[in-house]
Image 1 (cartoon, rainbow, N blue to C red):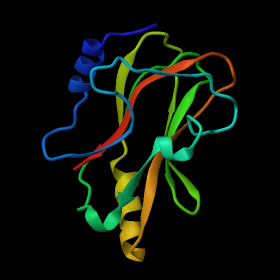
Image 2 (tube, rainbow, N blue to C red; image 1 turned 30 degrees about the vertical axis):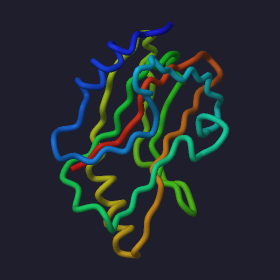
Image 3 (tube, helix red, strand yellow; image 1 turned 120 degrees about the vertical axis):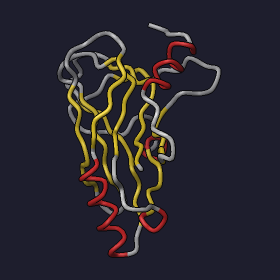
Length: 157
């Protein structure tokens, strides 16, 4: 199923972060293109694409003020109920920040989940040791059917 750039842009604007917020785009959309990433996830958590770097962005605690509000957002068609997406902190190890389970829907939707406490705890931990990490997303499922990702991001202020 292919959606026009106008629909994708409209959904993104509806889910846009408030003014003064920071945003880390983990996937999508390419300007002037209706892009979508079709994935049939297996049972093991994995990065999408041929490299983890395609699903990750730096998160440097030294450059970030205390976090008052943070969200993990997806524009996606979830697909079978076994499909799931998670947000992780990834540097020398992997730590899960949030996990989202499909509700079995086969229609596109824009959804955001508040992750304020988890992201602020990560920021404080990194600031205490003077470090940075990467925020990344992974997908998993049971090979039951595809999910489609249109955009994946984290925003905070």
